[in-house]
Image 1 (cartoon, rainbow, N blue to C red):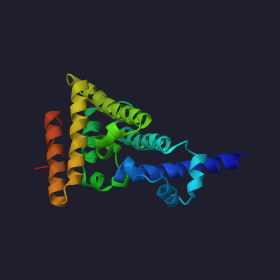
Image 2: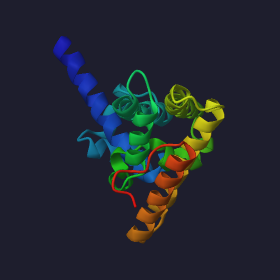
Image 3: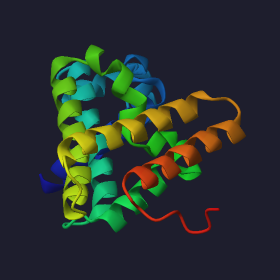
Length: 200
């Protein structure tokens, strides 16, 4: 029994991993249950052993993506966020590496534009994930003594997300990298952070 339960959990995890990667690249409308199950190495009929509907899958895939975002926040901000950690988070979030790793990336740039069209449970989880990300930034700003940290955190997150979405939309890589660089420098300046190491 324990082996069977563990196998079922591993299968569910594999489906969610595939769904999260697909949604980051193609959005929630781009998910085909049949294609997803094929990519996960399973039959279409096995889907309903794990999820009650496609909408149920989408909601849990949103959770899966934001679990990655929580790990990213913890990596850079830890349990007690500070401005140095926020600077490192901004530098990574708006980096070439982050721009190119679309299948493992933060869901906010990929899905913000279609959040209004997500099924209700998925939209609620998306908003909760977004709020959690913003809260980490807010706590770092408060630790740095910045005023009106709540509104500022929303503005910082909006610039990070919008910048990454814009950079990925540009076909010319040099131009995309210039967009990321300009936003990193602008955010550091706005928040009173020192310039990036090696920045001229």
